Every structure is written in structure tokens, then in C-alpha cells.
Image (cartoon, rainbow, N blue to C red; front, side, top):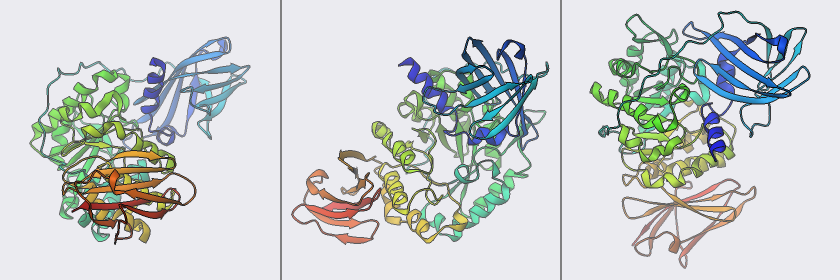
Length: 510
């Protein structure tokens, strides 16, 4: 069990794919020391220059015993244990037993290493110098546990937009302004999507007084916040309790109160706080006081700032997230724009259901609707399940160029109303073969119900009134995707559901 948990932790500290690592490490040159004795020794990798002018650096330390290799791979903000094998001059390294393809693979050729990082990124290895090292981090003990009072925000699940899924490290001031404009013109704002959240890579460096500055992509964060506010929207930002963010930029470690004051002075309304490099310093069981430190710092600013915890559901965060001032917390790893990832994330919501409610929400990650790798039926299921589980609705697509189908899904006010229902209850599922029925109690005494077809063929779905736990006979039923009233006959309603599609109803009792 310990091995499985450790493996899960290592994978959780990566953004569930190699994209961020590739983005900030390349072009990559690896320098090697100790090659005269096989692959033993310390290897230093210099990467690209970050948008704040810092040079990326990675350290690979390997120990060889016969054909077995063990070691660690570290960058600014990321550390993972690796294991693998050496066969002659060839080596392959993996981050976990579950990984099917090597994380690093290469060959020793004429005193140099030639190989591949991930799927296709080449590296060349040469002898290292004594200058190849990562900065040391002084340990700061977390504060004693104490509750942070509720800030009164997020009484329904937050709605808005986040930059990471589509733009990753290419986000900048002009793009955020254009997205804000499109949130208004598309009707997103009026439908309830009010937060425009900047994810990783906005960070610059700290000045002589330790104040964190934005990098050249965001020349004036206060002016940007003012612009977003002028559109009737709110601005969100991103940081980490570790010394580095997931992308290797400066985090808030040791500067929590200072950064909270900076964010408040800029006019920030939402903070996503991503565990990332904090996992190199703290154990999972220290998450609560570590997050509490920023929660208290945000409260002390006097500015209302939604606090979003992003630590992938580790350490049963749903049980203590609200106690550290959190308004929402991730219960999963990063979502991908594919059916299996989306369904996997929402299924992990099931055991967390008792902990959802006004002001404190379970978060299965951002919406992928409109990013192009699922069908419209699958995106309707995505939207339906997020609404049924009272999940935050944070769009991750390009709202400047949405198709009619994408707009119809994201702007479905009847489905949004289920998500925003003031009772704040999370749906529970019952599986019956390839069909799964989710039921969510509503504040008006009715229920929202979604029947999901997991199969690759259309199926007939039947919803029985007796399974809905209503307090009386069905008075009214409405299909929330066809926007039509439907009738229960002899206590049930049936309809065909497309592959990976959903039948979603709102049902009220007499």
C-alpha cells in the first residue's frame, strides 16, 4: 500500500502529462559527470530561459548497480524518483511502474549521451561543470493548526474561465483582455461565468524587498485587473505554497503574507494555489497547516478573495479544506480533453459528496468543452455531470471563437441552474450495466437526474420515479437539453441516449 501511495504522489506532482515539462525544459542539453563509471553520478540539464529571464536547470542523479538504475530527476519546482535499466550503453528510466514509455532514454556514444526525453525531445550529454546545481531551500515549519474563518464567498460553485487548458505558458495580458471582452459579447458573463483566471507562467522575479513582480507578459497587473473589473468580471491568479510553481516560476514559499498583500493591492479576486514543489519540502500530512498559512494571509488583507486549493485530492482534502479558508479544492489529478479522463475525474467525486456545500466545493478540475477532442455528446455529458456534482464551472476553451454547439452547451441556463442550486447538494450515482443514474436533490424539493450511457452504442434509458426519492408523485419533468417538458407514464420515462451521451431531466413532485 505504501508503494502505491508513493507512486500516486509522484505522478500527482506532474500536471498529468509531460507538456509543462517539455514546455520549460527545452531546448535541452544534459551534462554528465562520472560517465567513466557507467551511468553513476550527477547530470545537469540546462533548458530554455523562462519568461521572467531565469534559466531553467535540471539535475539527474543516478546510481547504477549492474543493470539496475535508481536516482532522482529535479528541476526548479519538480522532483521525482526514477528507476530503470542499463543494457550495454543504452539506458531507460521510468517515474513509476505504471509508465509504459520511458521518461528518459538514451545511449552513451563516444563519451557523450544521446537520447530522448518523453516521446521525441532530444538531448545531448557532455561532461558537467562544478556550477551545475539547484538553489538550496531552507525548511520553514508550518504554523500550528487553527481554523480560518469562512470568508462568505462562493455560496454557489464558482463559474468563470481559466487559461491553462488551452494557452498554458502562452497566456499574456492582451489575451486575457480579449478573453474578458469575449466573456461579455458571447453571453458567458451574463450566464454566470464571472472569474477570468490567469494560471501559471505570469510570475516575474522578486525585487530587493521580496515583492513578486509579474513578468514582461503582464506589464501592469493592477491595470489588467481594473480592465477586467470594468467588464463586470473578476480576475484570478495562480501561485504555489512551494518555492516554485509547476512550470518552474517563483512560488509563495516564505512570502505568503507578502504575496497575499500584493495580490490584494492588484485587485485580485481569486487565487488558485497549486501544491507543486511544496511536495519536495513537506509531507502530505503537512498540507493542512501549509494551506492554512495562505488562507489566513488572504483573510488578513481584508479583500474578498476566493481561495482554490489545488493538491489533487491528496490527504483527504475534502475533510479539512474549509477549515483552512478554502472555498474549493481539487479532488483529482489534471483533466485531459478525453472521455476516460473526464469520467475518471467525476467518478472520484462520489466519496467526497458529503463535504460539498455552500462556500466549500469539491473540484474535479476545469471544463474541456470546446477544445475539440471529444464529441458534442460527450461535452454535453461533461457539462451535465459537473452540474450534477455541484462542481465549479471554469471553462478552458477559447471563448473568442466558439462554435454554436459549444456555446449552446456552456450557456445552457437550465443546466447551469442545476449546478448553481442554492441547496448545494452533490449528486450520487447508481450504475446499471452501461447506464449510470445520477440524482441531485434541489432546493425546491425536486431533483435533477442524469442518465449517462457509457457504451459505444445508443441505448434506451428508463428513469423510474421510484428511484428519485421524491416526496410525492411526479408533477413536472423537463428535458434540460431539448428544453422540452416530458411526461412520466406509469411512473417512468424512457428515451434513447447516444453513445457517451446523457439524458438530463429536472423532475418536481406534486
